[in-house]
Length: 64
Image 1 (cartoon, rainbow, N blue to C red):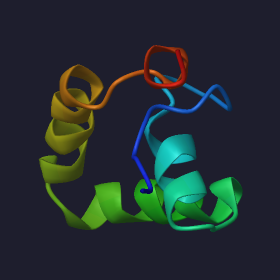
Image 2: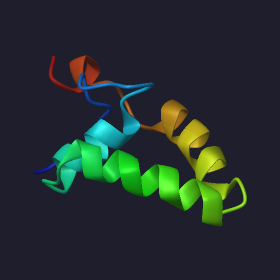
Image 3: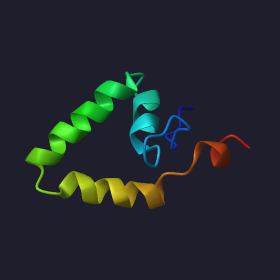
């Protein structure tokens, strides 16, 4: 079963790196899409990112 976790390939908290690994996408494209989406979301994506930090576990916590 595939699990979503915060990646060790981090820029900030590893959320976007983890999403890229989960969906098998290039992390740079996911990060670029996120930054572009920040301009159009009026802060909603930023709030979702902060919430995801507390909900999605770290990679090393999942792989024990």
